[in-house]
Length: 110
Length: 114
Image (cartoon, rainbow over all chains, first blue to last red; front, side, top):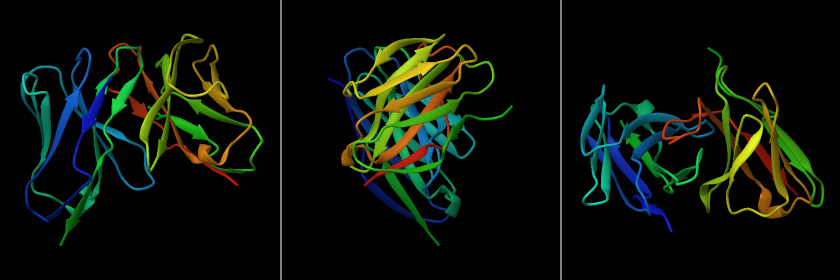
C-alpha cells in the first residue's frame, strides 16, 4: 500500500522558522507535493519536488530525499496567516489520484 | 481565470436519501477528481474523470458514483446516504490528470447526514 506520515500538530511563534516532515511508503514514486488548507477552505498547492533537493518559493521551501523516502516543508518568517493545515501528497499510480498524509495543523502564536 | 466552483456549499440530508453534488473546473481543465475529507480519514480519493470517462476509482462503495459532461463539469452522486457519509466533498481539476501532482481544489460541499 501507500502511506504518508507527518506530525499531527506543530506550534511556533510569529517570525520563527518551522519544518514539517513527511515520510512516505509508496509502490512507485512520482514526486512529493505540499498543500495548505485553512480552516473551512480549499487545499491549495504549495510546491512539488520531483527530484532530490530543495525547491524555494518565497518564504516556503520544500525538500526531498528519495533515498530516505523523506521530505519536508520549511516555512520561514512565520506569519499569523500561516496558521493552517499542511498536507504532503504523492501522485498515485492511477491518473488524477493524489494520496494525502493526514495533515499537520500549524498554529502560529504571537 | 475563475477557480473551481462547487455547488451547493452546504447540504443537510437524511439517512436513506440521495444527493447530487456539482463541480465546475477551471476553464480548459479536462480532468476532475473527487475527494472525501473527514477528520478521521483525512482526504481520500473517490474517482477521476477525463473527457467524460471515469479513468480511476478509489476504494468506496458503489453508492458513490459520478459523471462528467462534455464541458468538463462533473457531478457526483451518493445514494442511500449513511451517517458516515457526512464529510466535506472536494473536487479538484487539472489540465490532463496525468501525474496530477498539482491540482486545483474547489471550496467543497459540506454534507451532513442526519
